[in-house]
Structure formats: C-alpha cells, structure tokens
Amino acid sequence: MQSADVVVIGGGIAGLSLAARLAAHAKVVVLEGESAPGYHASGRSVAFAHYGLGNVPVRDLTALSMAELAAHGSVHAALHIASAGEIAALDALEDVHRHYACDYSRAGPEEARGLVPVLKPEACAAVLIDHSSLKLDTHAMLQACVAGVRAGGGAVVTGARVQSIAREGAAWRVETPAGSFTAPLLVNAAGAWADVIAQLAGVRPVGIEPRRRTVISFPAPEGEDVHAWPFTKTVGEGFYLLPEGRGQLLASSMDQTPSKPCDAAAEELDKAIAADRVEQATTLPIRRISHSWAGLRSFVADELPVIGAAADVPGFVWCAGQGGAGFQTAPALSRIAAAAVLGQPFPEDAGAAGLSFAMFSPARLGA
Ligand SMILES: Cc1cc2nc3c(=O)[nH]c(=O)nc-3n(C[C@H](O)[C@H](O)[C@H](O)COP(=O)(O)OP(=O)(O)OC[C@H]3O[C@@H](n4cnc5c(N)ncnc54)[C@H](O)[C@@H]3O)c2cc1C
Image (cartoon, rainbow, N blue to C red; front, side, top):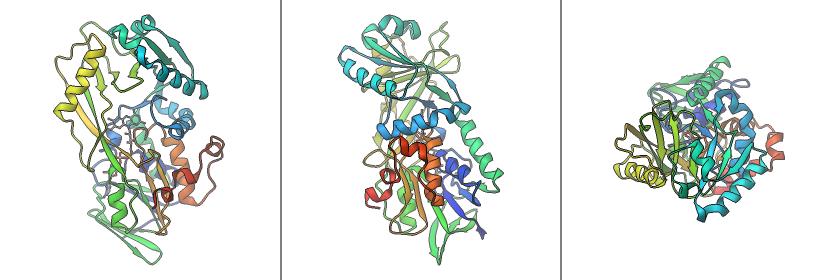
C-alpha cells in the first residue's frame, strides 16, 4: 500500500499538468492505466493553439495560457478561411482576435493563395491570418509535467488501471494491478472515462460525452515545400489542414461523432469525408492516405471544463471535460484545478478575465 496526499487518476495532459502544479505542495501519485502517459486523447492531438475554436471561457483560458505555452511551442500562423457566404462568421472571429489583442490581419484570396497555393479562390474569398498562434510540442509538454511531478517527490505509475475505489475513513483506497494506493484527496482526470471513475467512487456522473475526431496524413504535392504553410481552417463546417514535417500534410473534417470511452480508431467513412472536404476546397489530389488516427474529445453539455470538488462526496475533485482544447488551456486550467484541490483562492488573473470556480463547478451539472 502506497500513501500520498493526492492520487490523480489519468496520465493525460489534464492529470499531469495538475499533478505537476500540486507536486510543489503535496505528495502526488498519478495513476495511468496504459503503459505510457498520453496514450489516449493527449497522444492524438494536432498540437496547435489558436482562437478558432471553443466558447468564450475556453478562449479566455487559452489567452491566459499563451505565455506559458510559448515555452513548448513555436509561432506558426493560423489561416482562417471563409467563402463568400461565411464573411459574417469571419467578422465575428476577427472580433475575438481583436479582443485578445492578437497579431492578426485580414486579406483576400490572393494573399491567402500566396500562403497556401493549392486553395481554390472561392474557398478563401476572405481570410484572417493570426500571426501569433502556436504549434505545440505536446510530447515535451507531457514530459515536462512528468519531470515536475518527480522533482516534487511524486510518482507517475503506468500500468495502473484503477479497478476499484473505496472510501476508508478519511482516505480513499484505490486498487490497481500496479498496487494499492491511499490518499485523502482523489482527482478524477480520466478524460473520456471520467464518468466511469466517478461511478467507481460512488460519485454522481456529470454526463461526459466523448466525441471521436479523425485525422488523416497524406503526401504533400511533389516539389511543394509545405512546412511553412499555415494551419488552415474553415470558419464554418469544413476542414483543417496543416503541415507535418516537410513532406506530409494532416487534415481533419473536424468530425465529432459521439462515442463510448474506448481506444478510438479512424473509420473509413470519416477518412473519406476528410479527404473529400480538402479536395473540394483545394487543388490537392489525395491519392494515398499515409496514415490516420482518431481520438476522443470529451465534453459536458455546456462544453466547459469540469473543475472542482464533488458536492456529494468529500475529497473527490473533478478535472475533466477539456474537449478539443486540453493542451492550449492546460497552463491556466491546471492553476485553477490546483487551487481547487489545495483549497486556495481562485487565481487572480483568471478572476479578472471573468472566470470563476462556479463556472467550472461540477455542481452546475447536478454533481
Ligand atoms: C484529433 C484531435 C486533435 C486535437 N487537437 C488539439 C489541439 O490542436 N490543441 C489542443 O489544445 N487540444 C487538442 N485536442 C484535444 C486534447 O487532445 C484533449 O483536450 C486532451 O488531450 C484531453 O486530455 P485528458 O488528460 O483529459 O485526456 P486523456 O489524454 O485521454 O487522458 C486520460 C487518461 O486517463 C486514463 N484512464 C482512464 N481510465 C483510467 C483508469 N481506470 N485507471 C487509470 N487511468 C485511466 C487514460 O488511459 C488516459 O491516458 C485534440 C484532440 C483530438 C482527439
């Protein structure tokens, strides 16, 4: 039996970034069911930070995270493209970029095609170029968190799929194939499995909805150096496209198919839709998909993260529902979650941005 101050269930970016913050204050053990951290959603992202997704609080969390993210990212432009019928949506996105004082510019098809020559003019009737978005090194982010946990005297235990959770007096007792663990505080950072963990602990679930997203990779056109192409995304339903090294491009139709928590895999139809959307808007012929994958982005009904103590059961803290922005919000969200675990006040800068514990509380979801 190993004892700690806090046991965190889930070795993705949510659990690890929180555990790294807590490690300076408490003995933390992270339990990860797979043989390595980041096997599920956190190992399957496209590793980008931008303002083209999410609701207002998620964008606020992104803005609060950008300075810290820069340590694990490099500036890489995002090109938000609109057809003639989508200009109003692009105007709204411009308001967002102005609000966060981003370094951005508006342009038309000529400039857009200067950046991504394969775009058809009608797909980029108007564009917004965000010159300050970031390509992230998500592997380095995860590893830095693991190092932070260890530096604070904590541990990240892999192969530790939590099988049972029991309350024994003032402590939780957690059973895994890698041993038994006990702590007065238990953090649920199990991503798509967060409701499964809640049920194991006798806590009311929050209604986590995992949604599958598919990514395809295919060879860049012969003779075209694509590595400097911006992350290119339609403002409406459509696709995104970004370079992966020198010779490959990644694309997604931004699918979000409801799924059970599972080891998600790309389905043929979703791959075909992604390829078709790219072919419709560009002159790229996708003759061969080199590889593909899918991952689960986990949401609750209002698409805000769930951070805070369960009202019904003492010592159980939620850190879930990061949706499609778990990396780009991790620096700010882990500070908020650490404050919730340690019983500290809400971070001042996040409060000044209009965020609050109440906004993220599981209580808003009846938990
Ligand atoms: C295709 C795709 C593209 C994306 N692109 C971006 C992007 O560009 N930028 C961005 O910010 N975000 C992006 N995201 C979203 C981001 O990846 C997620 O928000 C983030 O990874 C969620 O982290 P997590 O730690 O909550 O979940 P996970 O990484 O899934 O971690 C949860 C962990 O809990 C573990 N677990 C579950 N049950 C148990 C148990 N019983 N015992 C022990 N361990 C357990 C799992 O094994 C898993 O490792 C993308 C996601 C996808 C799928």
